[in-house]
Image (cartoon, rainbow over the protein chains, first blue to last red):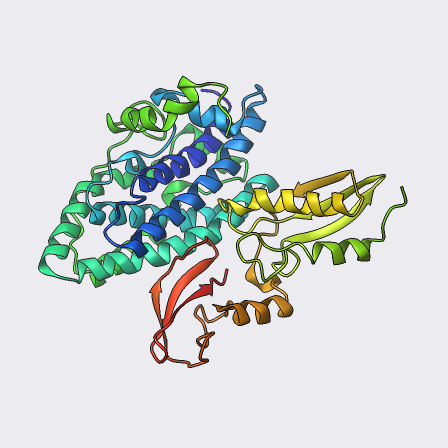
Length: 251
Length: 153
């Protein structure tokens, strides 16, 4: 395993990069102009956070790579994002459900990180937390509005929840990188964030008239990089095309 | 060259408009956190609003250009993210100008207190997001005009 701090920073930056890219795919085609703008703005926040996380990862690595190098010149097996965030957008309901499940994790995660023993990490977490709280407010309200909406919107939100639920558990799995981060006073044990997440998710999904699947089976392999889903390669092919085809391209 | 006084520099910076909301200056916005001389280099510390805000880079360029125009050739812009930017740093002058311009200033309650056009308190949210990362869309149910609200963070 490479330096756990570098691995940890990649996980942070890859989550925000891949989710940010995913939701930017809605730009121009969202169901309503307000939603289009909201998704694009959320994507922008996430890409901005990525610049900070991957910028620090590159600095920590000290191999002369930049945040852009990390984003555009790594292949699937080098990515450390959760499987959840690379899942395809599906319909609007899937996109919002994925966002909600992630936001509900990201808020307590960043809250804990904001006390990190490393000032650089604490700073990025504090900055990102404000944005994540705003995202959660919106994704939560939208999940409720759609879940407790029409028969069709409820059916679609339930389908989204059933489809995405097996990808939620990976957020709380703990491995050697998490242990190292926990021991050095940087991050909380991910398993300890579960209670807060469960609380947010149960309350929200209850209000949304949705039923939480009773299986706790968790797909894994994203944050360790061992087994990404087939969707990540397709996403990278689109996202990395330009800088890979025209390596010296400048705006 | 003689080094201009720091107070003078702040005045110059207060004349640099925000590129997306030109009625307020970058100083009104609260993103210029410090100005100091490091030898002959003028160091300007800037705290970005939203992490992905595309205006951040333009703002740094505008600050540099404005200072050059005033004869300061060695400018260093330092980005500082801690403590994170908050709308509490908006100046009172900036808040008043926002409202005159048709943008409701941020409120701790999380929504505008009144319509910036007709001042009615009958307002409702259209969308939590707006035309720039720092704004949300609201509407007045009296005069029926939509308006931007500067999000409180």
